[in-house]
Length: 153
Image: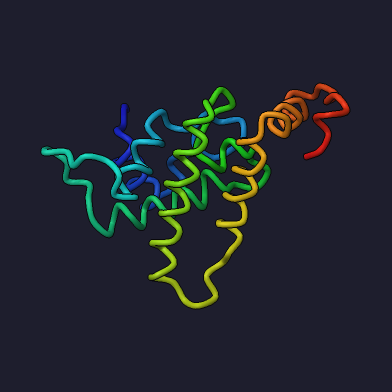
C-alpha cells in the first residue's frame, strides 16, 4: 500500500507495530520526510486538498521524529531526516525545521522537556555542516579509516 507521508505518520502513531519497515537504522526513511517537516513547521505552502493539518499531525510528527529519526544507533543523517547523500543546503534546512518543531513542542510539554532532542539535532548539524568533520564521520559509517585531519569528530 502506497502512503503519502502525512497519512503514514498518522497511522504510525496509531499503531507503530504495523510499520516495522520504518524501524531500524538500516531502513530507509520515507522519501517525503522533508515535506512533512516543512508542513508541520509551517514552512510549506498549504495544500488545497489536504486534510492533514492541525494538532493530530503535529503530535504524530513528533512521535515519528522521536521513534524513527532518533532511534538508538541511528546515524546523524537519520537524526536530521536525511540520507548520506544530503547536500549542505538540505542539512541546514532540516536542522532549522527540526529545531523549530521541537521549540514548538516545548510549549506543550512540562518544564522537564528533554533537551536530548535539541542536543542531538545540534550535534548532528555541527558535524555534518563541517566538511572535514563530515568526511571523518562518513568514513566511520562506511568502516574506512579516516585521515589524520578527519579524526577530529
